[in-house]
Image (cartoon, rainbow over all chains, first blue to last red; front, side):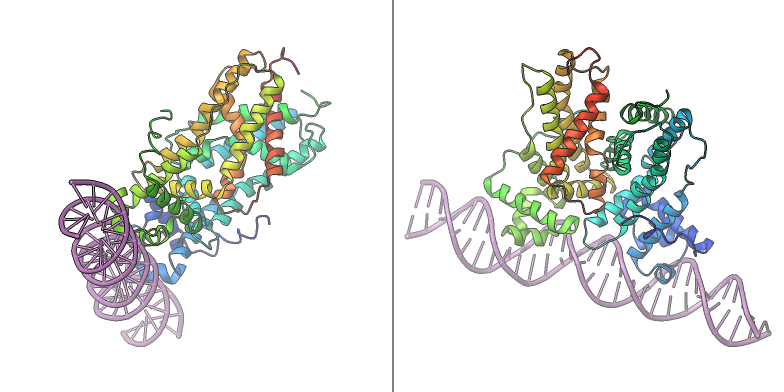
Amino acid sequence: MEAAIETNDGEELTERQKDVLNAVLRLLVEEGDRLTMTAVARRASCSKETLYKWFGDRDGLLTATVRWQASKVRAGNYDRQHLDATALRASLEGFAANWLSVISSRTSIALNRVAISHAGSGEDNLGAIVLANGRIAIGERLKPLLEAGRDAGLLDFSDTETAFRTFFGLVGRDVQIRLLLGDRLELTDAEIGQDAADATRQFLALYRAKTGAA
Amino acid sequence: MEAAIETNDGEELTERQKDVLNAVLRLLVEEGDRLTMTAVARRASCSKETLYKWFGDRDGLLTATVRWQASKVRAGNYDRQHLDATALRASLEGFAANWLSVISSRTSIALNRVAISHAGSGEDNLGAIVLANGRIAIGERLKPLLEAGRDAGLLDFSDTETAFRTFFGLVGRDVQIRLLLGDRLELTDAEIGQDAADATRQFLALYRAKTGAA
DNA sequence: ACAAAGCCGTACCGTACGTTACGGTTCGCA
DNA sequence: TGCGAACCGTAACGTACGGTACGGCTTTGT
């Protein structure tokens, strides 16, 4: 029940197809889920016939778009050999800041909205894809860091998943739900950095090993 | 920019109208946002003409439904005169458990989904209503408790809003976004109680006054 | 150079659904 | 008892949009 099942793609797309999906992304940000196939065709300067040939139907187009965006976001894992308290803190802050900028981006908000809409309308895997490339992907990337921190004697926890979920909560707090519900909430880079630092400080206060260094 | 603006209602509804809105709620849970006016009329055993006379149009019906549910959920504030460490912890756990059962209820998930969908589709206040009666309402009810805890020397923080958002994050973590995206995640009462206790313990670890009691 | 394939733009089709209209029935009230 | 208002059930209307068909243009391969 982990990632990799829903992430097998983003490639085998021609440049033209990527252009089309980028147009869908822009349209999704502007119009939300009410985008029409006609609007997509006009924006992407392609025919509807081509859309249907390439992506099957409307859901196929949305699915391809979500996968395409996911493949663009996928970042490298933070695995370093030398981990001290300073490096751990910096890495955690990096994760937190990155996550906050992702969830507060217009693209992420739009994609989560459409995925949530579809999750409410019967059988659909858009939600699973977004989940696999959001919440789950960040978890898979962060957990090795947490365990490395524990191996280095810097952190103390028994269950990695639980520790990760705490970090997730401390970082995200109410940001995502507020944005999804339409709350105006412009996060500047400075605020993101501050929030990331605060969340990291709180996380370390909860999970720093008693015998660890400062 | 606080509540009370979007909450002026839930009343001046006849019993028959409440029945209709309850039917909408049930239908919303079953069908999601794709519910049709015809389906509502059939389920509620009323005519479409009546629906339009009472609620104006489809959006009016949804808005009335969201307000009606909000008016049902509104709970009393936790204000007690005698607050010691034990009572504070119990109250926080109560808030946390209550919040977790709300956001994991099928009704809340359905309503948040439709509100989020509409927030993505142009001008709409469904999101604002849900926000005002969810995230903001719980904040308004919890903040007095936090400040009472501070006044009693049990808690230490400078900004109430920030402290509340931390508590919010520790309690909710990834639960709401996972449920909204369609993740199967059945929370039993026992798990909710456990999670509420854990979140409260972590919150107190972060915000307990240095000079306070155990 | 020419045929075949791919694609653009547009017109077209079918359906679902929001909204309105209307005949028939019930209920409150004088 | 009779009248009007409210309401139910259903039929009908108009539109928006997903999906398809087709004529013409461009590219590719031989």
